[in-house]
Image 1 (cartoon, rainbow, N blue to C red):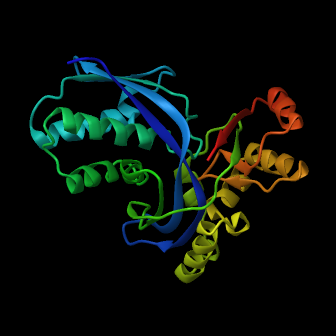
Image 2 (cartoon, one colour):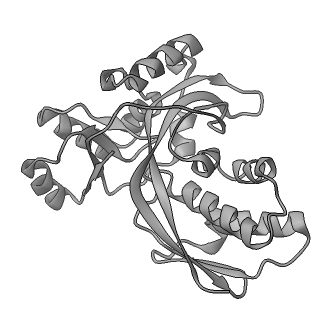
Amino acid sequence: MQILKLLSPAKINLGLWVIGKRPDGYHEIITLYKEIPLYDEIIIKEGPLRVETNIGIPQEENYVYKGLIELQRRLDREINFTVYIHKNIPVGSGLGGGSSNLAAVMKKVNELLGSPLNEEELLELVAGISADAPFFLMGGTAIGRGKGEILEPVECSISGDITLVVPSVSSETGKVYGSLTEEDYSLETYAEEKIKRILEGDTQAIENVLGEKAKELYPEINEVCRFIEYLGFKPFVSGSGSTVYFFGKAPKELKRAAVSRGWRVIELKL
């Protein structure tokens, strides 16, 4: 087997609404996922089952390792692949890097093994590890329901320049969800109407209740939002943070502020 190289994309949430709490303890959400051109680089080669990253993520905490162990259990056979991930997507940033890595590697390894899992089984496996991972098996733009794993592909007219600002803090998804109260819940019809407007290109309709909670929990995220507003742009939080994005190019003032504050600025085109 040759060494295989994969690219694993990030995503942003063009809005996220929480509908309520489920009997299983998770929250029912509606979100709009959009794949963006920011990538982790993955190498797969034959060798002992091992997953390494350039930033030292412990193997046992890595979604890819968890996925390969689960695949090994389901197939009742050894998985002899070594995976190396060069992380360009910031960790704990709400951009879905770990979920994307999981989807990319599991899809490719399943192919290399002769596709013992069908599409539905593969989706179910990755969804059991990360609610965002099924989106990355699909890519593009999609409405996510349930925990985010029930997907409806859609077309979105939003395009052009987008700037991501990532503060030097990792947001804990469980902590953000744990801060929700019933007052934060939205009606499903309200969320669906907002998404309809966003898909037509109305970025002013973007809302994210998790982002509002993340701003309360992490002053660094709130500081980024306030600075972007000061520059005349409308800031949006992706997922549960910590990434804040806005539509447009990064002004020089932002780049200067980022250097002194330890923020990472990423300019992309949708």
